[in-house]
Length: 442
Ligand code: GLU
Image (spheres, rainbow, N blue to C red):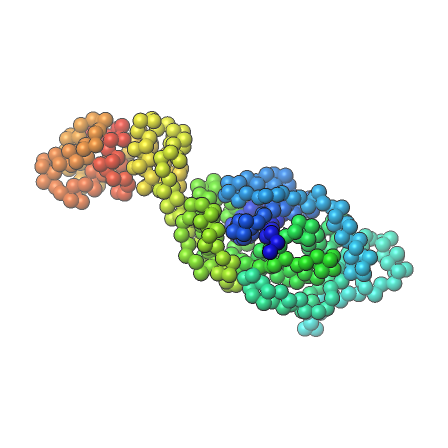
């Protein structure tokens, strides 16, 4: 079999979001599993909306996730190829010039709908006489549609199974706009052929595109790749996610402290029959990845699900992996490994480490329930000043126990709250040796 080549083709008109990641990851994993090639293709033919800033962030996001591309391509550098393809289609009679304005098209659509007919473009431009075209061209620029063959278009979708779309139910797609801009539908096909793309996975919003693109590929003498369309993501309640995708950008998730392994582990399995588990490497993720396990139903995405995975990822890290970040907090090197051991069980994101270090360094605002006030005051009188050794917690609580007769939770919890200001947290025996300040005695 020939080499498998996939591509991720974002339009650099915004930041990548969680939905884009799904597409990128699936294509990446297919190539990786097969030892093939993964192409990053920037669909930037829309000169007005495409921005270098987005190109930079897209690359940064993918690098952060470890989704390395073997090749990068940019559509704005390939305009000549699209013009050649357009010439071929024109020469073969598969391209025709149209002049209807958006308002005219809208009116046609409304009429069709009123008559209970599907709003498919009626091809009136095909019947224009040459003289008429000359007259229209003097008024406005024409744009170009691809003439679909009105047959059924069939393919075996890698996720949706056998699909069959009647080309007569689809409007001839516009491939070149009146201002000369080549549209995605054509550019993408030319690229897929030229770049030897063998597999395309994209969102199910592209199913109709795929039908028309199969005909365009064939008209250009290419062989259609294998197509698979993944379901679209919805919010946790099944609501459309499109409006919220802005806040679910990869950039924001990174800033919030989600880890790459958490994100990749969730997105490579969500919507499939395989369980979601933390995988620390892309190899592991690729191993259990199988497109056939994904279903057509919309996939619910809840950003909250990223936190348990992030937590597990952080907890799995040995000290060496986080030493720099801990040093950056100002934790002295001699206690840094111990600090990590104690703190890592109690963080959800790396940024939470800061509050544990602040507690060790500065002490906490004690939390003392009124009914425990006398008890805590007495206990604090029994607490020697820091630094503490490994048995400090036991020694202290033993002393408090004998002095007050309290035991169990009634003994430990008020002391934990007095020292840390919280009712949950690290093992106190391990924490005590890191504490540099404790509440003052009365
Ligand atoms: N630039 C297109 C998009 O972001 C690519 C679609 C495709 O994969 O062909 O929707």
